[in-house]
Image 1: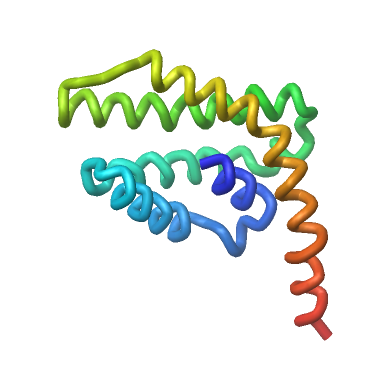
Image 2: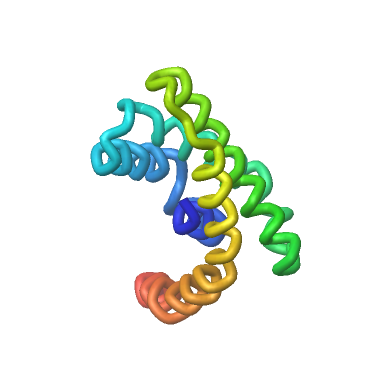
Length: 130
């Protein structure tokens, strides 16, 4: 989810709702979840990212952490709701711990993906333009 958030923010024309939908179905098949659970969650998060993308580029790291925690919190709330409806067994503490882990991982992931973007993606884009 964090990688989807980063790439939707960095390259919104290349990574959008279709990519979010496909990644969600991939995660559904890996997790063995209800078909459509993660595509729904990822598309909702993609919508929120696309709505706040322009503002989020000017956020400080502290504001980015709050923004990411809100996005991950929404995704976890949706997943928890769907899991509660379909299976009846939920563990809210597990969902909260993954939100905290995502917030702690965001700065490291942001720096690493920014370096990949500057080294690889930018070079490829520049080489195709005349």
